[in-house]
Image 1 (spheres, one colour):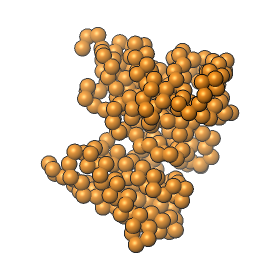
Image 2: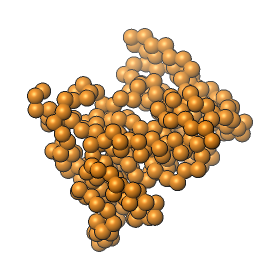
Image 3: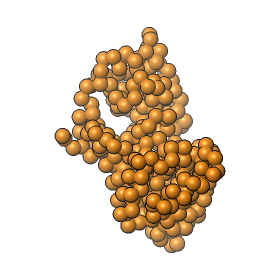
Image 4: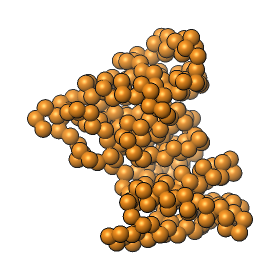
Length: 298
């Protein structure tokens, strides 16, 4: 592949701006979990897209917000660190939120980045055209963007234009991944993420960010895989919520997770879930390492 091109593109933005939906859309499969809640992506995930001779490696980063606890600080640090590896930065902006102070802070910080920064305004279908053009003008005045795109990551409008542009500007370089590879996330880690997604979707406001899912065992044969996962919570009351009345909630979570895992793994899945109370799971350096986050005490 003598004329091959390859570039790493960091996708950054505030929590719930649509970064995970965007990366799943461009990659054409599930590499990042998507929930209506903010801050569900906890670590940098790489998704791979091929367009002509160009391989685009997207880094889906955690949302950037004003963090005050160690675990959340590590997530935000991972997001900014993702820029360091990138050839191009995409700032994803939720059109319906406009330019909030937190967004302006990100835009100002990006001015020091010595690489192309493209603005991708998402959820354009939810905003009137006049307000959309006002938003574009405000962004142009405040930021230094190589290009501005308007898209709907959910239905795919405008996404092809982003891909075409990126494929044209990435440098000549051998491809980093095999042509058929969609992501660098391991299937075992994705399995934990899928279960965590199902928990988020079912528990709404009751149990937002106090959970961690880990594989206890993984026994794979040619046609099936037997997985045992522990759901870590911080308090006994949270354990009761996850289990639900007569075990109904954890059963529903298990069924939904197993169905998606069977699609991802293309084989029969036997999934066992159980809940453990671990008040200090957010202070365990091994949990940070499992997600590729940097553990800092204090």
